[in-house]
Figure 1 (tube, one colour):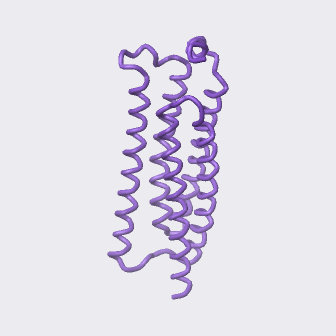
Figure 2: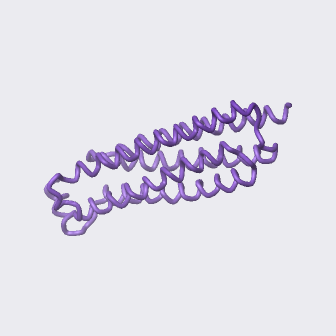
Figure 3: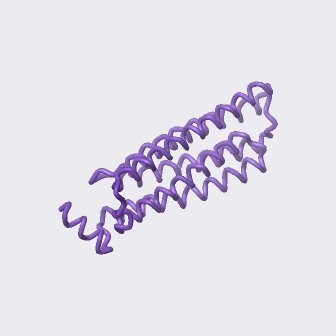
Length: 193
């Protein structure tokens, strides 16, 4: 089977596993673009720093997703096979880029959280916080759908890109759950005050 897969990838014929992986990453990138724009709009309209930070993190990760998708497509079509160092190094580089993106996003969120603690209060309105909670719920749902699609597509032959995407998707899902929970806590604290 590995020899057949190599011949198919060089001839331009995509295997079902390769199609499944590409479509999973494409769907995830489309969903991420949508939720990034939604969170940005809600963050700006509702004065929600949480939504703005999540939008920044999501858009940064979206860029990494697009690069990963482009590299995966080139790998599947045999366009990167001529490199002396092999394609495994490119997959590892994508994994490192995803990890760096997650670290930068975590740093951004920690910086915003410290800024809110230092300020002692939030400028967000109850309507803005309600919008943030709704956008957060949509974000959790979208991240769950993308995680599940990537998780299923990552089955089969090992791929460093798919493994990195699977881990990144799990981290995104968990972070969106945390963002959703903090949005509800913030909304409850503003409405009860």
